[in-house]
Length: 335
Ligand SMILES: Nc1nc2c(ncn2[C@@H]2O[C@H](COP(=O)(O)OP(=O)(O)O)[C@@H](O)[C@H]2O)c(=O)[nH]1
Ligand SMILES: [Mg+2]
Image (cartoon, rainbow, N blue to C red; front, side, top):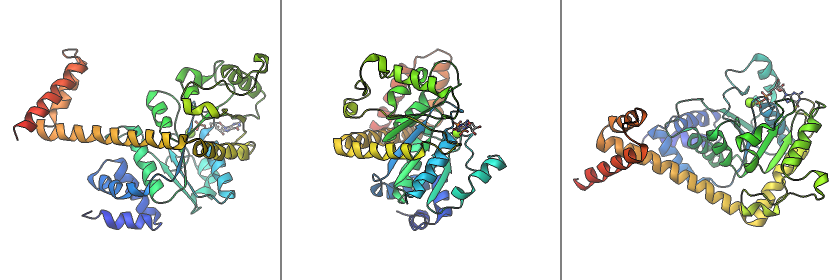
């Protein structure tokens, strides 16, 4: 390593929260300093349990994550929270009331809370989320809760970049289960119907059970083996209830998260998921390196010109990408 990176990486490793915040900004913004820090830190990663918390806006994810964090703190566990949802009430833009409610977490040294910027991630938000989680893993947080809004493919992609995916549902958010449409049901390891203080939660619970083939009338219990991966065959997706505002169902949810990690490790699936994460990291950096190389060899405008041509339908994206790659290989050959 060279430059200024070692000092603030070391400070972050030593528990300096401001250095950690600065490190995360560098990593999020894709600076050279951030990349250098990530490189230095990566060997220390791979131990944390990364838990994606996803679901429709308004389901109560942020509230639930805050309460869940307190539950884990009661169990003596240190943890980090990453909010990819820009409306999360953890930091800067939050309403005063939200901040007051979060005050105990904000002043707890055992919790580190990070809100991701909603834009400006050179390699895409999924890759930036991985990088942020990797840094938090490296500096020693054994549990990382990542809140993402379960809307849109990019968000599903982020949720998938976790060892455990918790899907938060809530009653009264439209007559259909939101997650079915978004394809979130397929990636869920744990489902929790929040706002169980609302009587309509029963109906939501029944629709989810039916959707998973677990309604009693179907004559069996236990999940039909999920199609998402063969590794999931030994895991019955728990369908829990919670009321984040009434502090109910939190211990059960924390238990389920811990049980899922134990299951992954027992079954060997932990390694499969670690491999998936390693692959995502390699592919994300491959893409970033390749784009940077294109820019250096062909000039900054080359990719933008191709994008423009594809937008105008003068070129298809397959030809455009192929042409860029050919030009790059030619430029390399001439060196
Ligand atoms: N009735 C009820 N409201 C809740 C519960 N959890 C969260 N809320 C409310 O639902 C709204 C959305 O919560 P928020 O945590 O921001 O949802 P997110 O968009 O999924 O992160 C807020 O007004 C919360 O106070 C709950 O368990 N019961
Ligand atoms: Mg939120």
